[in-house]
Image 1 (cartoon, rainbow, N blue to C red):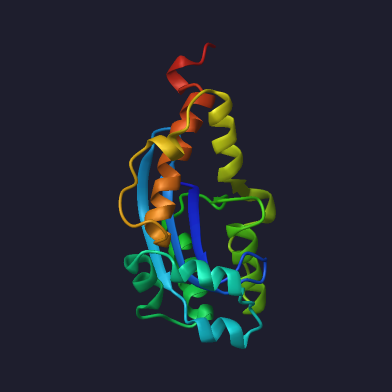
Image 2 (cartoon, rainbow, N blue to C red):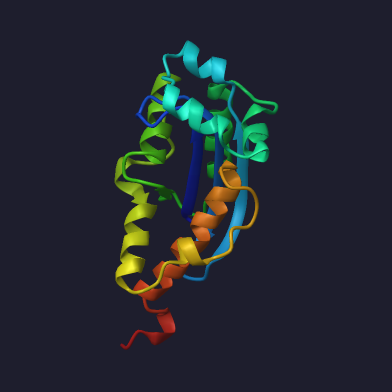
Length: 189
């Protein structure tokens, strides 16, 4: 599998926002198959020490979320450089080619914030910028086709848990993908 869905939980919405958890899942949009997963919490202090930003509005938003969501970001965590190194290793061990398509929710959110964290830690991001993929664009395409699996599919797990969100996003992107891209067996020679 070479499609990787990323979801971040952060303390802001700017490219420099502090990350508090990262969820990732490999998936195959042609079939909807879900592959290997990655999840880790990030020590907020390690992010702020490197200059990551916090946003009061986002912190207030977190205070209004479920106790499960708040507990998920407050549990055992690792320094951001360790989490990013672990994520890079996870991707290297799981991908089936050197070209990984990295999906994030919004053209200016997950992938941009993750790349900024790699830059802050002086680590190299594991994907080239031209392999960024946008979930929100896919959702809009689905709506234009008359489907909205983001809204209509049951949500397994806890909302705002980075891994649960990543899996859900991979599932509904796959449904839309399959509407947009004809199955190989349906393609006429």
